[in-house]
Length: 177
Image (cartoon, rainbow, N blue to C red; front, top):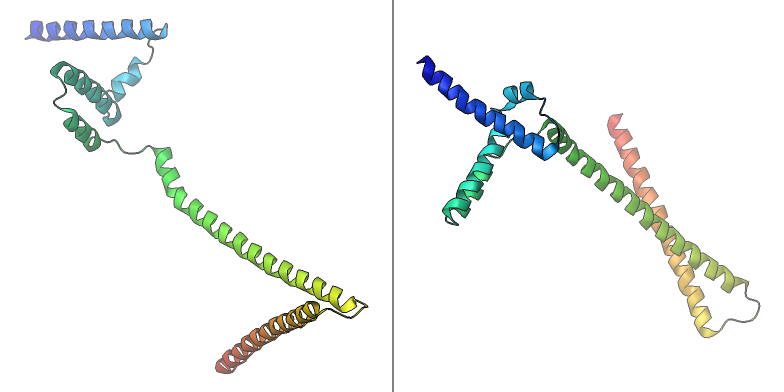
């Protein structure tokens, strides 16, 4: 029984020694993290990595018959996300939601600015028409009437909006009383 165990250890030690040689040849330095390897070698992350490499080698030897099965096994053995990835995915919806809210806020401000600029340009055009000394041409007179009616209707709409707000506040105050 002891001979059998010693024989198995010698075989694995030869493999381990060969792994050290390969590491040294690849990276030109000795592998110094054996203690970490002993702890981590059976973790899912590392065992999946070695299994995937072995499956890839065996498929090359056997031919192209198992391409679909290799991809299905890779999705079945998908490892869980790391701590940082889990934290990032938890924060992502909040960041996206904040970005959407910020964009909507900027869009409403931009629309309001465009309305104000349009109104100011109409007012300056109307001021120019009113300040004109000589009689207005027919198209200028019709433009003046249109601008006045547009600005007055806008004012009426604003006044009506504030009246409705005031009435709803009064009715809600009466309900509270």
